[in-house]
Image (cartoon, rainbow, N blue to C red; front, side):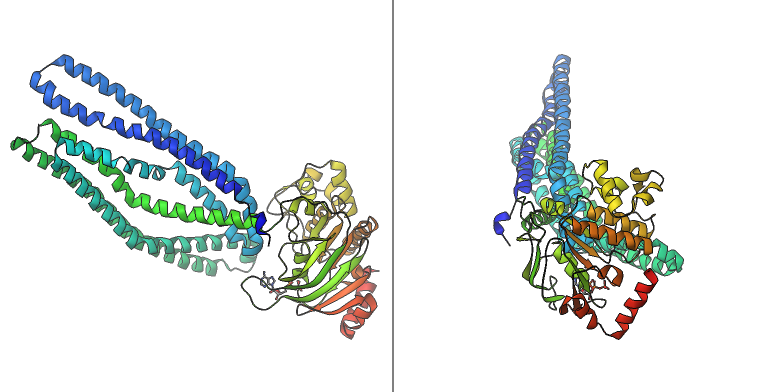
Length: 573
Ligand SMILES: Nc1ncnc2c1ncn2[C@@H]1O[C@H](COP(=O)(O)OP(=O)(O)OP(=O)(O)O)[C@@H](O)[C@H]1O
């Protein structure tokens, strides 16, 4: 795997942009915090100057100044929040596309759940940046200044503030230690529960038809109870310690007032310092109180950032980024073996064959022999473990996807369509002229069927075309596969849902593709289409049992399969 292709650009660029934005927010935050000091200073002046002198002009002037300061401070505070919202949106915009692409790519190897996690992570990271927690370190960085002011009022106030900060930090650390495991457990169980829900919704027809809902509902409620248990276990501890922290902050304020009163009685401090010290202590301890919740958010944000970085790294690493147009429709499969990641037994062993332009090779074999696995490897969804698959001399796995996709048509065994119109689906969501779309539909023999849909080519499809019949879906997916006259056509059981008419249309579509010089690989059970193949490959347990001339391979199939082929031919004719 070419490490030279490693691309950190989107992640690094987004982090650099984030760092700049956060630095600007920190700069504004410094003044927001600084201006808060005007309140205790105002209080001290009122007590020590205005009340003793009884001067109303001084009172009015001080009040006006402090009022203006607070208006300015509120404006700065709003500016900081707004800036964080903008940075979060920019981060989302910058990473959205790359994360989406990497998530879809990763789903090929790690399944749909990991892709869904990636999109949730991106959202979580955006909320973290937009929310208050990201400013926590900035607010805490102001603590030394507040401590100095407290100490200047009287060293004992400084000592009290320092003790308060230490106590609240200890509470935050204890909360993190005690609640971390149950919180992680609750998140894990909740993800499973969500997957269970999505699965049930996807299979709602089967569930309703066979009355499986009560049992599934019981299973879901068991999962929900377990998830709630974990939430409660972690939540109770965290809530108790958060209440304790809140009470401690109020208690510390009372302690500072009490300390101030004692200092005034002993004439070591002026009365004005009492309220000023209480307000500054409260302000200084606020971020430490939020540390209990903020800590968790920072830990989560770090975990999310690591996952997103790895996802973008892995997603970008696996394919080449350079466009290489496919010239000749020559596909070569060379001593191909495939072992799925994390497994030991190979699904395919030592498979070799080639297809020249205009040729067709059929793949047959019993269920589970590895036919679909071979089709997926040929279109470069997975990386071969050993050996290779080359289209026009380039590895089908490493090939840059857009230029590869322009030359390839693929019809998977379970052809799902995407949400969008029939036209968009056939055109693979490219901005293609309608003539090309109609040409592909005609080639797949589906033009008339589309004409009978409510809005013809503009009919919107939802849930992967769930409201179409299996045969309709398969034929629209065939039109999508032959769209743009691909040079390599890989069809995995393209006739599994087709009637005789559909089968005839399929044969015609494949013949047209071959006549235009396409190489065709077809996985099929029925002989009608296989009769058109130049050569057959018989797979058994992932290994080639027979490869070559059609008649030779069929003779190796045994009498039962031959009899079935003859009966099928009679039915179709
Ligand atoms: N991602 C995967 N990880 C592990 N095993 C897999 C994976 N995909 C398929 N398999 C296994 O590989 C074997 C071959 O599957 P494949 O779908 O290629 O068979 P097939 O010949 O197409 O069967 P059928 O005719 O029933 O479609 C099966 O045993 C299947 O369970």
